[in-house]
Structures are given as C-alpha cells and as structure tokens.
Length: 165
Image (tube, rainbow, N blue to C red):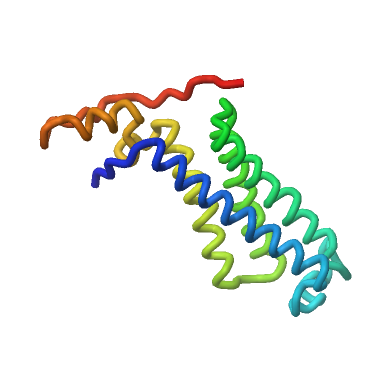
C-alpha cells in the first residue's frame, strides 16, 4: 500500500498528535493533583512509590510526559534539527507511562488509546526519517509526484532535514 503523503503533511500530523497528548497529559495532571485522582481510589497506589497521594503522579504526568510532548511539537514547528529526536522521546515517554500505569493500576481502555498514540508518534518519526519510505514522500518528491504523469512517480527520493539553529 502506497500513501503519497509529503513529509510536510506528516510533520503536521505529528505536531497535532503531540499537542493532543500534551493537552491530555496536562489535563490528567490537573485531575491528579488538584482533584486528588478525580475519583480514582488511593488504594490503587498502595504498595507503590506513590502510596497515599496523586501529587507525584500528577507532576510526572504533567512535567515529564506533557513537557516532552510540548518540546517535541515546538521543535517541529520551529524546524529545529533535533525535532525528530524530541518527538521520539515524547513517544517513548507516552509508552513508558502507559506500561507503568498498566503495571500499577491495571487495564483501562484509555491506556489502549494512549499506547496507540505513542506508537503513532514513533511511526511518524520513522517515516519522517525515511525509514518507512512507502509511507512518506519527501517534499521534493511530493512536488515531482504531483507534476509527473500517472505511473511515473519518483519513489527513490530520500529525506534530509537541514540543520537549523
């Protein structure tokens, strides 16, 4: 299956997913800290490092998970040379958060959603790196793709990010 998406389109999708996850993480952090878990019983934290309070959980969720997502989105928007690395860190942060949450409190359907979003972030990073070339066409190839007659598309182009300060 060939998806003729430009790297510009994939970057936009990645920014949208990163920002959604950042807002969700900050919302979860507020629920954990301000509303003491928002109805989640403290018993789920029994025999863990977080026993007795959702404060540390909320801080980790907001600062580390949400913060890495904001940094990744900002780096992509401002076209920093480290943008894909920051986005990958954010994706891994979401996966680690989900695995840890599964281990501590058990399964919820929301964990499947956030696991899928973290995995999607990593797939988009790989596509933008050119590791999944059939998913994305680089900007130069996408212009050729649009200009070329049907059946004569350039699929051998490579993706390169120019370094910016």
